[in-house]
Image 1 (tube, rainbow, N blue to C red):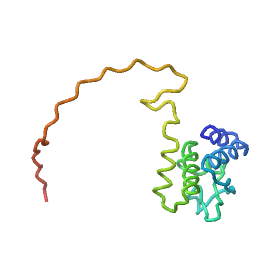
Image 2: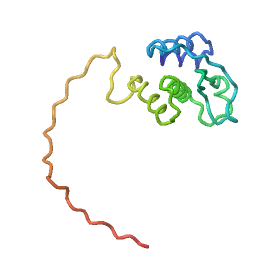
Image 3: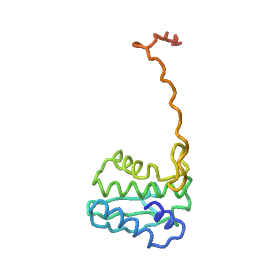
Image 4: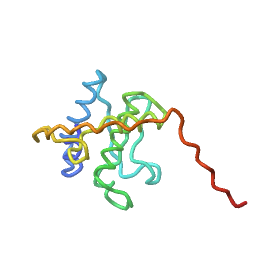
Length: 148
C-alpha cells in the first residue's frame, strides 16, 4: 500500500491510489470509501476530512506541494493513513487515528536502524552482554535548590 501511495504522489495517476485504498478496505472487510479531491480544505490547514457517510475528502498531491512549509511526500502519505484510520476505526478521536497511521507504517522503511530489508542477508547474532546488577532501591539523589 505504501508503494502505491508514493507512486501516486509522484505520478498523479489515480490507479495506484485506488489500488491502495481498495487493498486496505479489503483487508479490513469494509466497502471502499468514496474519495473526492480538493485544492485545499479548511483554508489550507488540513489535508483531509472523513465523514459519517464514509466519504473522504483529500487535498490532491499537486496542490499539497504548493504553498506549504511542510510539503513532503511522507507527510502526505501519513495524512492519508490518518484519514483511513478515521474510516477504519470510525473514530472521531485524533489520537486513535494518529496511532493507527503510526502503527500501520511501522517497519515499512528499510532504512530505519535495527531493521533489515527482507532481501538483505541476516547479520551475525550479537553476543549477549551480562546484565547489570540492579539495586533493590534506587539511589537517593539530592534535589537541586531552586531560586524563587
